[in-house]
Image (cartoon, rainbow, N blue to C red):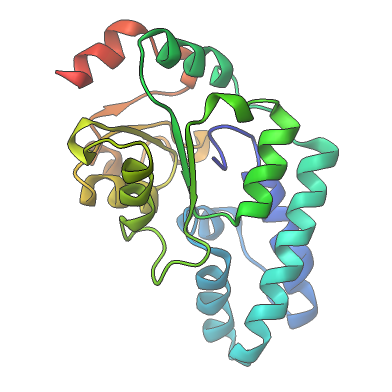
Length: 211
């Protein structure tokens, strides 16, 4: 969802900087994008441990960041280029469409309301309350189950390394659409397809991955 359906990664970055500033924590863009795809609590655990912050602060900081992101999505969130046409294409091909995200359900609902795309998704799953988030594959496996589909029949779209690892661990095909700052990283070679934008998806591309 984040970075694929909606351009929310800059909003997450803003929210994280604002929330972590009182702790004296500052995160550069490169460091931040290495942590995309993680749940907020795991993101905070990493940075609090690195800076020696009491981990009991994690729950309140997680709630604060989530609240800030939802407010930012509602005020200035915008769909990513090609997202609606990609969803329409999948629908025309008779594909079931699911949303599997590390983000909490409250943010998932806010994003779908903001973009008006909620009716397209047969299933929505969140890693919010799972034992493990991405790169663990459980959130993707749960989504496949909710779609009554085998993971081997699924094509996952991702923008993060943690998401890519989760998708391949779930035995799904994976198309990656990385952030422009990350698109030259060599780890995208693990994906079945690498595109610069959802606007590049077409029937031939999707059909080739379904074989």
